[in-house]
Image 1: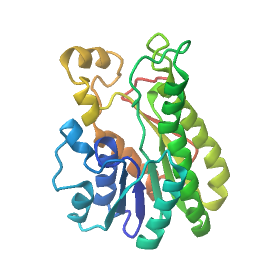
Image 2: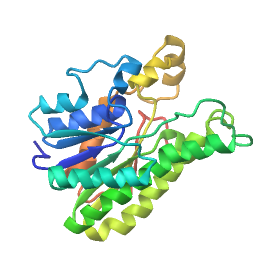
Image 3: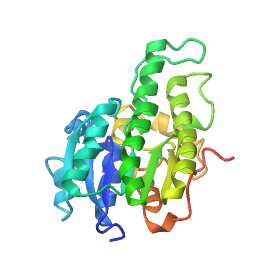
Image 4: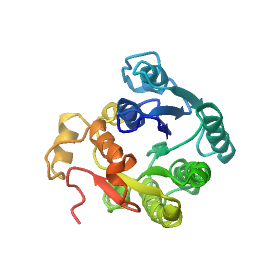
Length: 264
């Protein structure tokens, strides 16, 4: 119960990787706030919950939990969310900025990505992360402690796909450098800021999009040193490291969780 008495906020946590982080943090003692734009999002990808909602799953573990519907691209709503957390749960010790993803359909080539598509991808990923970090930083600075984990990607560390996927890759690369800047600023307040960069993970959305189909799976495994795709729990274990005292002297780092895709 490493996180007994701690309060964590995981954005985008009604399904997928965010849900895995939330459940793992609750398992090791944290009270967890679930945030998403749709609290029933798991149904969209056939992800089975053990209770009616992720909030209920966490309460069944004996932890406190509340669910807050808020779009993290709206700064006012993010500020209200953090204010609600402080009012109802007393403090905020951990932030995991999971909300985001390659959620804008259509091609995204470096020389031709449409402006609206690029701006939307930056909003969903980069601005949502910035707004969440800025809102959480205020109470964390006041209490002079906190752990922030942002979510980048292997896509933000390398170029692949002949110039495709540019909007997502650039947004994740920006998150990764924003993490370094924020760590530098918040370090004197005893706040650790780090970033995880997942690789080919079998989230419910990725499975629904075909990542676990034999042809695609075999192609991706060819890129991975450990010769397997990752599972959400592989990422959740690293999040555990970054929000507990195991990482008290780690800040400003980009930690790849990719089985050895980015070997540099």
